[in-house]
Image 1 (cartoon, rainbow, N blue to C red):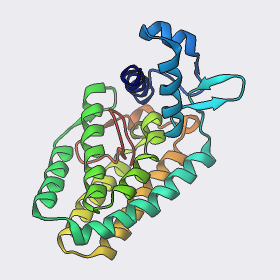
Image 2: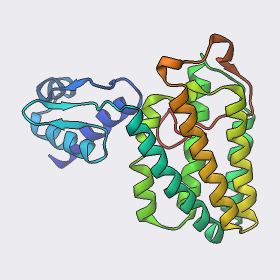
Image 3: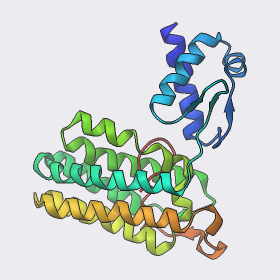
Image 4: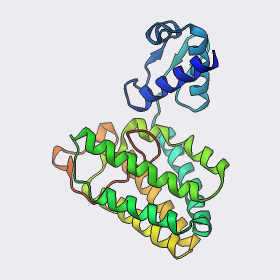
Length: 242
């Protein structure tokens, strides 16, 4: 039963993060069980695990659904990330070794080498994946599993919202400059420098998301971008966060 629940959890989580299940979609146990070819008990356990991560909302007497987030929720999430990830960058300045610094620099190279047309799903997925890995590497370099868990619990919403689609060329170029500067700060073992740039990085992403929400989508002229630019922030599958 535990194995079935884990498999159901992994499949549902992947579908939510990939955007196949949308904000507000109802998740009926019976329908999910039938689709997955299992009983309702492991599905129920999977939904509980997803609810604990904030990816599913359990409603009294109404079952489960994919949560809907408003601007206040998004603002709160990015403010929390600014605190946690800037702290992670400060710690990483004392813990990151040369191998980690080399890995971070290589990921910056990879992101800058990609030329993206915003209609190119595969290109966006590649950028998002590298960006997620870059942020995850910084947090891991802080050497605090508890901190890593807290950050991971916050990155799902921007991933689902596909924030990178709202980035202008200038915003995306700024984002990758931030990445480079943070690597420089870590290499210099300057925790304050790394922390301040990471905070600016996350808050710039917050502003971009809140100012260019679906109702204020960028014009078609801003939809195709060149290589130097994306804060697909984090945090997790094929889409992004700052």
